Length: 533
Image (cartoon, rainbow, N blue to C red; front, side):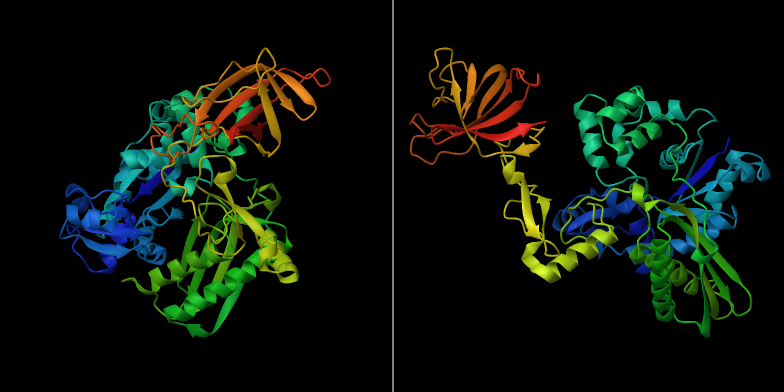
């Protein structure tokens, strides 16, 4: 059984920022992104600083707090020294992200007399350079990462027991092992009462596959401590490896970073021509006097040209600025794809206007982006519009179309308070057709000023079609009536009340299928606002 070791550096963005500013490790520091704290040092947390705080809140809690902006390049550059220290103990390591690396532990553990000795050796090597680190060992990579956060060595075969009582939110605790949309899955599992990984693992995999997304199957395997569903390892053609001979030799950081970007683009052109995508990449650097420097980078999703160039830049900057810097200028740079997948198996959503391709909110594939840009060139910029989440009460208000490439400046912010918003699940199809609700006597059913049906609905009439109701829910009034004397958003004046209701129609005689509708009452009339599929 292969064992996996994970080394995790807590609050790495804050640690890297402190090292970049030459701060003492005990000084409080916080890293901000979009005006909120995304990482902070232990001393800052002791003073009351927490992730998600606004800048002023954090400074009020800790007046002596040093504040700096998030910089992924800085994080990657300073993490190189940590990788060097860990590699001195275990020769082959994989960087999941700056602040987290993993390695195979079975053979190295025998050399150090056991997994405990190996974990101590790795931790001591990293702490010797002034970086706090925690080490975990387990059978599977996901379990090892969680074990590192807890500073645990999980016994062989004990992954399932270790994961059983952990919260289901651990499925999104590590960004490098999370894909876009996993947050929605975790929220859904929480609402269903599956609060721990063990409860989620108890579900039958066939039920998970039939009721949830494809990513839910992967998450279920992770929660069940089953062997990770690894990307299919395709045969790596010999001509995919990018080798560049530097003439003249490179000894400056800016020149090395520029070279890395050019080689990254060359690599991805070759991958695109071969219909492959890379999820694990090894970067080799050779100096004029024959010194080698290699790092393996791994990503949860296939690397993009920009992501590849960033990793090459981090590695080169970290080495060129380290204390044991190269003994001579760089003369050769090699990009070696180690793990490849079929890009046809990847699904990209047509959302994320104004966001970078590798953003956590999801993005477009390279071909889709090029196609949309070409359509814009032929038909004009306004011809291509993509949906983005928006705020609102009704289902139609929660999606907004914006011009592709423009910043998504929403009139209705998603994170604003919408007290009368329709609860999920939302209807799959939107509609604007007129309808009538009828009672047992065939009389129209309205919504009273107190927010209730005037009579129990029995039938729905939509044009010439009339269907009986099998089940109904509501009505739910929404909106605020501005008339004087209105209380609680309702008014006794006829036509002033707005409300929504759900109805389940009886099966159709022709097809034998029933259908659920979302009805909206506005202006003393009913309309079909959505259809549930």
